[in-house]
Length: 480
Image (cartoon, rainbow, N blue to C red):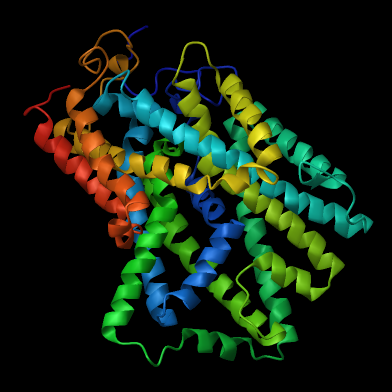
């Protein structure tokens, strides 16, 4: 491969859909401003699961509302710090996560975490395509009034039509390249917020002005002590960090498109704490309003919409849920899946080819999700793969900042047969051993009952262990 002497001189990254998905993007391709970075996080937060998770935090952890809010803000700030660290090399060199991993694990060793991350992403990509299709099915039923019908593999004709349309919609977006992905994210993020604010206003009107008092009741925790509040605070922080864990690892997949480092930092600052505050406040107000209007605390927004008996709101909500689900699917699942698959054969698998492979898996997983896959208890398998990724973050951070002093050789990152990152036949044994040892702990928190109390913190501890063990095992004075 031709030598790459300084950042961003190579072209053919994912802004060129026919190009190699892993090539470093050039300066003229680094077009994402702070608002695009902001909307990465807006879309990552704005899922149906994210809403239910945030709403439940104010109810299920036995803490006061202000404690929960403080924990959410702290989690946002901590995640912001982590992604600034993991995203900096991506922004500086224009490289995605699988290429960055080559510096610490080797040109061949990096395929292991990239495949694990891609496996998790492909699975959830297929599942989210299915869930997005339920929003479209809701829209069709709201407009046509058609209900029920015979089922095939657990889905009616409308369900299958919706699923295929949503599946094809994803293909249309990625087929046009990352510019279209950015455009969709920039539209979906603000749109979802507008609808959520509208739902709060509607509940405010129907609650005869009692929404705030109901919300204050959720905030109140007269029986709480310092010990219980602190325990809940730590638990909420751990839960939210685990929620963002996957994107923390592969954030360079997105930061590579940022105009510069200050833009990335500003986007993360606005995107994480602000989105956490705004989204959490809207989720809390909606939950409080539902408690007044319907007599119970409902944490599922689809159920709230269904109980309003409004066709117009049902249509708007269906579009909103669709936008939110597709948004998080592109951020958390599609991009890491494409880059991980492309890393298996970088010279042969383009961005479009990797996207088609991902889509084919999604077609099978999403199509069979409702009838078969959801019955298999697949969450343990996926959580295990996710837990094994935690040490990779620590290893990459220690290697880049402490061993290499924030300097990489791009030419060697793309030299698959030699160069300083080839190590021992493409594997850095110190990193691989550190990865294996630390992953044992992370996986144990998923399967061993004795460690169940650490399940909310396994990512942070696994990342720290990975970095510490790697630092001890790596040879002193590693040079680039």
